[in-house]
Image: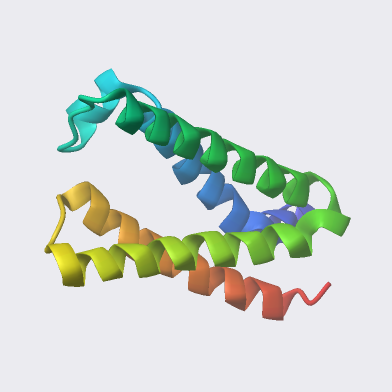
Length: 130
């Protein structure tokens, strides 16, 4: 039981990231769902293409996180990728808030979650030095 709890605690940042990023990626790639969840209307093929590319990027990054959870020799790289992914998204959202104004609640939640996960991943990397 203690071993399982330690495994969960060590991988918590990756597990939570997976639970958020995979559905978000799928929503980004599904125009009908996206327009219901966020204030985004897909009205050009270029925007649809961009969003589907982001969907696959999110899913591809998630594959690295899954590898980090299953294979301990990938854990450090998966954690580093999580830090980079979360904090660069948060920086981009913050930049947009300064330049463009405040987005809808879903994107405000995004910047908060990304900051928390990014900094928590830094903590995990320092704590579990592999």
